[in-house]
Length: 279
Ligand SMILES: NC(=O)c1ccc[n+]([C@@H]2O[C@H](COP(=O)([O-])OP(=O)(O)OC[C@H]3O[C@@H](n4cnc5c(N)ncnc54)[C@H](OP(=O)(O)O)[C@@H]3O)[C@@H](O)[C@H]2O)c1
Image 1 (cartoon, rainbow, N blue to C red):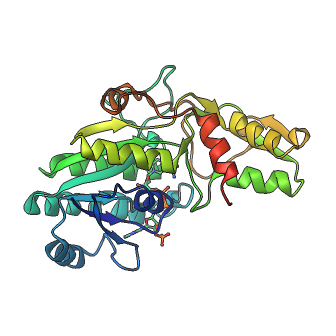
Image 2 (cartoon, rainbow, N blue to C red):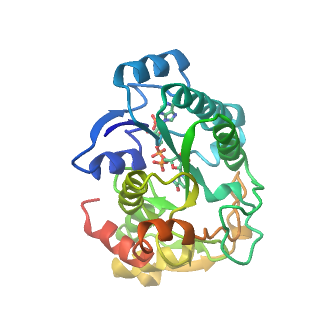
């Protein structure tokens, strides 16, 4: 199977490349090799590579900066995704795309299903919703994988920051009133390859098992570093950020579990594996 990976230099892109099954012929492109907003370049590359599957791991992911760069966020996460969808339809390629729990407003009290009402509360979420909408209208055969709270070895992430702070002996306050599902990029990547092999399509939520607050994740990391004394909880109101965050954005992953044959590993197990890898 010929598979093209866009955004291959990003956190998830790296792990998609690293976990590709042996029967896949990979064509990875980082941003410098192929910019997804450059329609003609993407069309020409699709013509050369002739992939059966295109995985779009590229995205504008700076959640707070998006508040002042909303047009750029929509250009990358919205308009460019629509272009990819239309090109995929024309070439007959299947398009795998990633979206976010930030398409939801976080007012729920139980996990969000794939059909829950989308209502983003920040500019990044709005741009991700735009991407979903244009891809769904493109006529392409698509799989939209919504995921959340990603962390991995190849990029900045919350567990990494917590590990560095704990090791540096820095007192740290972390919010205890936002709840989600921390998700390890290699676990997500492996699940995505299975979903591709099983020709999954439509929208699917994929995340590690369990739910947590950011404080829970930090507590796990600080305990592992032997410095639980450095950590104290706080409220979102005490830690203002430019972008508002959903209060509760746990994704219901039952649909993907049905296809995958079970849940992804627990987030605590995933954080352990992350901390055991060379950081
Ligand atoms: N991280 C999370 O918690 C999270 C949660 C839910 C969903 N997602 C989604 O998962 C996907 C992958 O995210 P990630 O965490 O791996 O983010 P990431 O590490 O920031 O990777 C995104 C990659 O896309 C590249 N990129 C940006 N604009 C591009 C363009 N115009 N053309 C080609 N490449 C471009 C970036 O390059 P530069 O670094 O050079 O800008 C970067 O390498 C995104 O769709 C994201 O929205 C992420």
